[in-house]
Image (cartoon, rainbow, N blue to C red; front, side, top):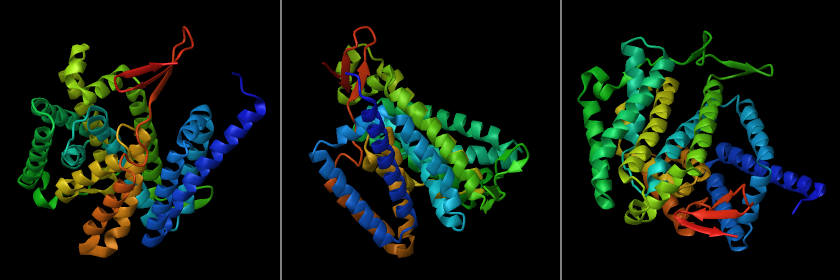
Length: 400
């Protein structure tokens, strides 16, 4: 059925308004005190539950699919203006940068935890490997930060293969135990390696440079001077968009379908001709590449890498980001990283009670929304030959 022009205009306007509201909520969540932020999250949870019961969520997704270009333009404009709005508060810009970095890690971790059903408790090790590799190459060997980032990506991918091979022999709780052991081994290896700084870490990691311009310098945009965090914010957002688009392509490809089939039933997937070893190892390698790139970005942004930033507690937080946002959903992983990074930073004032409050907030959210803030949605394809719409979820298929 062909839509009338006024219907397209109305849909585009509605989509733009919804995206604008979400962007403004994120801004308020970022700048508001803790009590206001928790209130916003509570209202958002209730709104999601209400919309889900009224079957409005599917209409919103359909609107976004039909007018995604409008949504992308509004989000791009908001991302461009956010550093301008926060130019007098470098700390909030720092939180925004860290949200994007953790978002990249969460997208990669989602390949394993969400798509394939392999609970990996060592994402911080992959994240740290990228940071340490890039820091070592740039500080100790004098390599360019950009080549150091490439080295971090490759090194983290190699570690992903090393984690993936023994993990392939196990599944379920045993897989989780193997990855926990590997995370602990990584932490002990860093602490007992003097050439990596040991417990003191590696300071003085150089910043990125573009045509001689250091990203550690203040940025002037629209005649307004902003702190150096604005440079890294734009770089992080660009990488986050790139990795999110890549993950979305993979999710809708045969590889994504194979991962979902493995997650539902490995025996059936193998009977359908899926190579379990190749598919699982690919999930580990891609997740490691994403985490390694984010780790290198983190190191060059903070100018320091230390073992405390990549311990087991960090792995738990990263896993919580994927579970809270919605497993097997790229948008959910990004949303979970944004929400939990902001909450985590706002809870720093409570010192010893920080992790207790953090855990209570997670429990409440997951009790209200057990499948995450944005649960996985059925895939939708259109066959060009017959125009038949196909909805696919995991290994199940419906045609209509």
